[in-house]
Image (cartoon, rainbow, N blue to C red; front, side, top):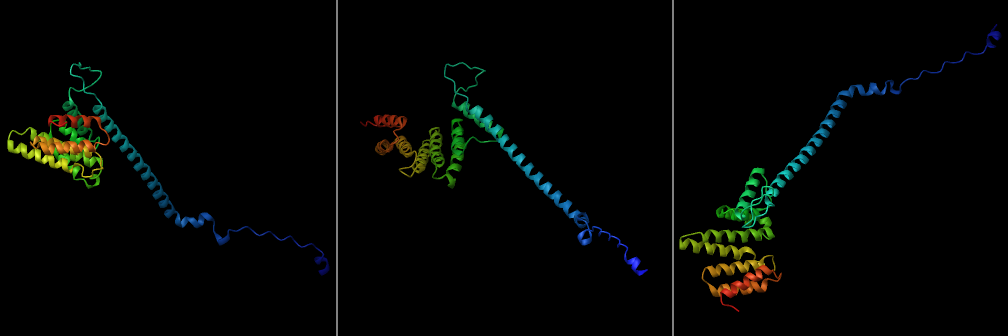
Length: 252
């Protein structure tokens, strides 16, 4: 009997059932942390949106600034018409430099923008017949240490001298006029202390003019001669003005 049973083939063993290693699925493992993952995703999305928003507004701000600047430039580029030239509505123009300067200043105020630095704005104010405001603007630019040795600083000091001179020339009181001319001379002396720097010849020329206004002919002639020598760039306009001044002083 035992032999008979032993002759029967053994039943095939059932294959093992697959199980998750560790006893849980990937989803089961992350379920306890799902809140943290969602919060992280939201944070990333917010950061990405913020960066995009900042970039948009920055670009928009630049576009707005460009549009405002273009509006001012449109006014600044209008020409000054000739004395006998008729007004043409299709081609806006200005009667003189004063009208033009005031229009540009108004446009700058309206648009809340500037075309350039203190030297340019000071020049506009001076052309507009506002010497006191021009003096304040030039002084602000001249006091800027960052531009002290740049052409901007030089132009601010030169402009300050011109504005002080213009104000002095309008004075009816002789003493006040004399003081104004002396202040203008001091500004021109400070204009360009470097004899190799830009507009050095102009600084000497302006000093000569003020000395002439103050009645100091000898000092004026010496400065005009020095300016003539310093005019190494051969600025034709400056050279002509120097020659006229020397001729007026009886120089050959």
